Image (cartoon, rainbow, N blue to C red):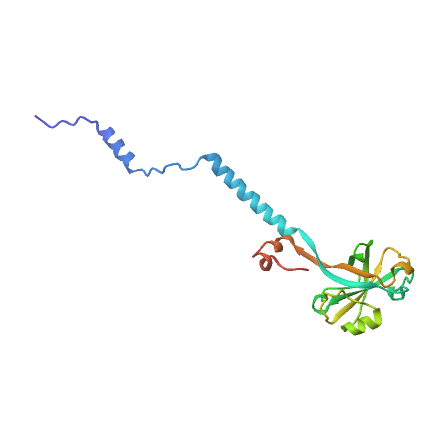
Length: 191
């Protein structure tokens, strides 16, 4: 008996072409892929937003309301305060920067602007003698940079002269991205 091929020639060629193809199984669904791309786009947009938003940077200070307001500058009728900053934190303090504070531990809040930054540093004894400043007991005795502030609210001298003041000076701003751990140096510092 002659060998007879039971398959047609074109069927055999189609079979060979089919076995030569690589078949990749579909492991994920199309909606999952779309959602992952959308998540990546949202993360990139959030990082760009965090890069562009700047938040204020503050330095804490303590001080005293000056007697008579003579140090307030051009408008002597305003209430003046002397703030004492640690010498290493006073680098970015300039005239015109905003100040927000509280008089005493539960007194009224006060806001104002820096009118003068005294040259040099002041010793604790010199601050006590010149400004009658008595720091809190838990404060370390250290040299201070003295900053004179004009408060916006006129305060009655008989009530508030010599009162203790805790304040925050706005020294610049930082990118929001610097508050994320590990990204502070890469995102840029304060300005």
